[in-house]
Structures are given as C-alpha cells and as structure tokens.
Image (cartoon, rainbow, N blue to C red):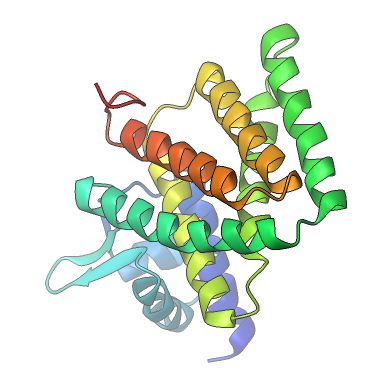
Length: 218
C-alpha cells in the first residue's frame, strides 16, 4: 500500500465527514466507503486504522464502520481535554506575547464582530469560524512538543464535528468573537491570570452550548 493512497483515503474521509456526506453515529461498510471516497479497498483498510486511533470511527464486529457518535461523553471528553491543553498554552503565550500575530488576529476578529452587526454575508459564518480556529491553533503553536500539537489537531477535528452536529448562529459567532477579544487583549497585556480566566470562560460557554445548556450556569 503506497502512502499517497492511504493519505488520500484519510483526507477524503475527513472531507466527507465535515461536509456531512458522512453523519455522526452512521454505520457504513468498507465497500461503501471505498465507493464514496473513490479509493481502493486496501487504502480504506489502512486509513481506518489511523481514523480509529484518532477517535473518528469505531470498527464494530458484524456491523462495520461506525462514524464517531457526537454524544454527551464525546463532547465532555473533547472539551475537558481542550481546556487542559489550551490553559497551559495561554499561560505560556502570556509570558512572551507575539504582538504582531495577536494584533492581526484582533483586527480580523473585530471585523467579524462588526460585520455580524452591520453587513452579514453568506460566507461570514465560515470566515468567522476560520478565525476562531486560527486563535486556538496560534495558542497551541507555543508548544514545541509534537505529541501535544498532534493531539490538539485530532481534538480540533472532534470540536469541528461537535459544532457541525449542533446549531451555530451569527449571534453566537459574535459572542464567541468577543470572548476571543478578551483573550487576545489579556495576552497583549501580558496578563496571564486574565488570559487564563477568559479562555476558560470561553471554552466553558462553548462546552455548555454543545450540550444544549445555557452558556452561563443558572
């Protein structure tokens, strides 16, 4: 099995998952995946090993391949792990803030907030979610440990899946972007305590909303 085919199968699976051709909890056969992704069965078998290790599928005897089910345990596991990794990341980032990068992120985040109020467009949600992802990737880039960064990439795939399985409105996008500004401003000030508190508040709100709960505890 050549690496390009294995890699192609893996990449096409993720694309199909995030464009909703594959649904959380769905069962599919290896042959159905081969036809959907247009790659040989051998490449599918090899890619499934990696996808199972990433937590995106389960191989169930007599039933086939089950796409990860976005249930309460899945959501709780993802956000608990995310808070652990990113809290340390934001602490380290506050020690020596990358002013140029943070200033650029702040400007583009503020632009998204302004557009949600004044001139929402069809692609605004996608643009906002991309900037959302950029901040979290920037935070984790402070780590030189490849295992941590790889684990966070796998975690981001789970968070994307959680988000796709729920509802994400322009109002929620605007609120999330404001939460991002709080994190960025604390980092620019070198205020480790405020940055950590803002990050935890942001992720806790996202966690609760993913579970269908109010953003703030009652």
